Length: 89
Image (cartoon, rainbow, N blue to C red; front, side):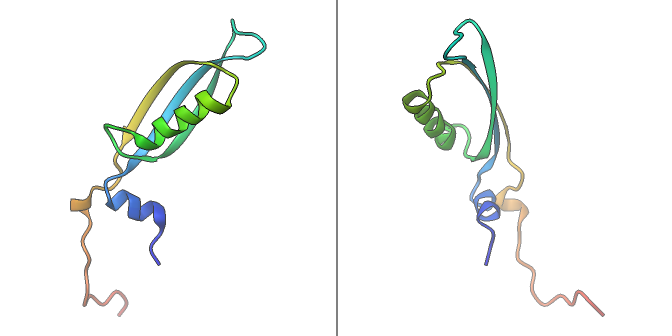
């Protein structure tokens, strides 16, 4: 069985890291940092935007800013299936 994260990479997902800065609920003048990381698809980032929507609905700390880094680790054209090769002699 193929690993789900590996399969997503073959589908074009890349590793997305977001640095989320938000205001502390009890001390709105203070900023706190939260780092989020998932596999997502650029440039639309549906997984990240889903998480940010959840944050706005469910978490008390209002968002200040979000910085995003994205890296596609494996592209579909970098993978090929090889059969008939003897690995051990």
